[in-house]
View 1 (cartoon, rainbow, N blue to C red):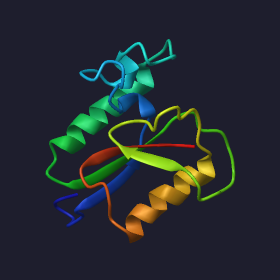
View 2: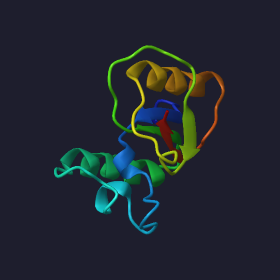
View 3: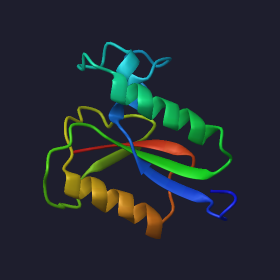
View 4: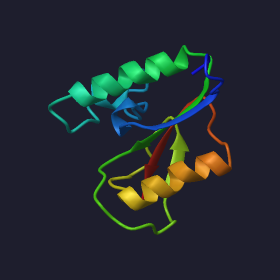
Length: 117
């Protein structure tokens, strides 16, 4: 990216790489907060997060929780580094809506962002 002059990356990851509210020194997938038995995807997203943190680039990782297909409502909650309290799902449409909004209105630089209803 640096070679090509690209300075910003916006990615969609998993809510598993957000900080745990119950065990703040752990990520959600590492804590008792996680309901998942398999963690391979979260581990891969954790590696990508670590690489971006160390990259010197301007990055944002949008971290949805349960992600059913659905339309854009434009009404959702976001929080830096954490899943919004009691967030249990977010549609694909609203996740895309928020992610695209970050292109037009740069926010949450060098951050993970939890998104949920």
